[in-house]
Amino acid sequence: MNQKLSGITLGQINVFLHVVEMESFTKAAINLHMTQSAVSKIIAKIERELELTLFTRHYRELQVTENGRELYALWKPRLEQISGSYEALYAKQREENTALRIGTTNTTDLKLYFWEIVNEYQNRYSEVNLEFNSDSMERLIQKLADGKLDLIFVPDFMKYRLEEGGFSWVWAARDHVQIVLPKSHPLAEKEKMLELSDIKDMTFVILTDSEYPENERYIEELFLQAGFDLKIEKKRYPTPESIQDFYRQEDGFMITDSYFKFDGDREHMIRKPIKGFFNGIICGWNQNQRHKGRDLFLKIFM
Image (cartoon, rainbow, N blue to C red):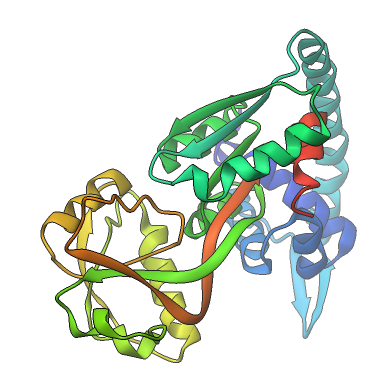
């Protein structure tokens, strides 16, 4: 195998084919349920790996180069062949096992959103068996890539990693951005919702860059939406599980969502909503894999 191809996934090739067919990053992104930025980065990665120019940009017009058209002509039938052979084998396996495999994070309070969705699905499609798997965010995405899960539910800041892997996602649950802070802090006594400006100078507890760089990126982009271009003071924890340790220390603030497990024994901490900003849980899937039960599940969100 040519080493230049080793860093390119089937999901990324699928993105390239969509861009060629639609001659637009924007239209391809909409069709794939991705952001335009994610599509653009995937194309740039393919061009960098292959050392080929596949598209040229003139003002707002995107044009496929001769290299791009030749690569499309080579890759399109091969991807269809791979997909077709996979679907035939997968359909055969599904005849024996029709279970829909769903993964959720072990730091999310499922009763706040998940079981209501599951109950609605089972009321509509009782013939589909469901299997549930709880794991870390990183392992859920890896299992999705390996074909061991059909759907995963993760916090929305993981959308960056899903998109970079060529996966699609849709909102499953949304609510106001939440801030966890000590009850002893003056802001805890504020009756109305907090503003981002109230907390822009605080020290935040976040996940480490080495494991979850998406967490810091999400927080910085959140503040940019409010016009605050600043470097935030941070205290880092390696995993979502270990980040709960900060509850015991009254050490800093934590930006989270309404669905993060907030244990009742943390009597010295409080969670308050941020006005005008929303986050939550997204549902991710691999478009290159086919599952009738999964497609029916996604109809709940569409």
